[in-house]
Length: 172
Image (cartoon, rainbow, N blue to C red; front, side, top):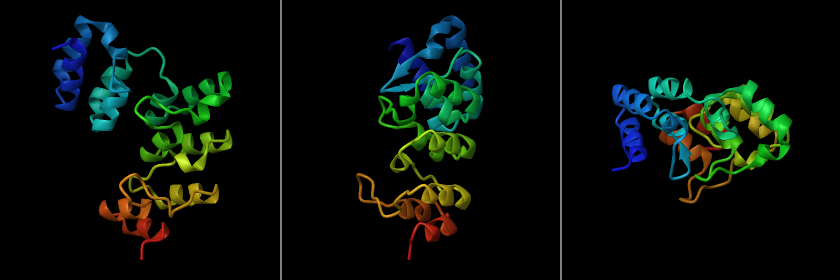
């Protein structure tokens, strides 16, 4: 098994001490990527906050996708200043900046991306707060769009128990 596989396996299992040991032994693993996701982004996807913090301390600069997923609007603004096209970039794993910022409920990052011309159809719902839903709808998000499995944002909100968000998105 490669060190990258070991790292991502330890992240998946929420093995903080193992992740720390692997990174101590090979600091460059902090920038490792697997299946299109960086180690810090994968830890965020898994919801392992302590591991996110551990890896983040070892990464000198976040990319646009990591900045959106972690809600680092200062880094996000600097990246967009340097390359405005990043606002609608798509990561190797298929997610865009607005999708990540909205999925992880980082309203300041969502506002920044929208103000810089992000395509509102890249937004993603994760039982978002109604205020964030209103913001996206105000920028033209279509609540009737369905994902590849035929589910709408309202369907996802309802399945996660977010009834108010589901109603605002058109659930009947």
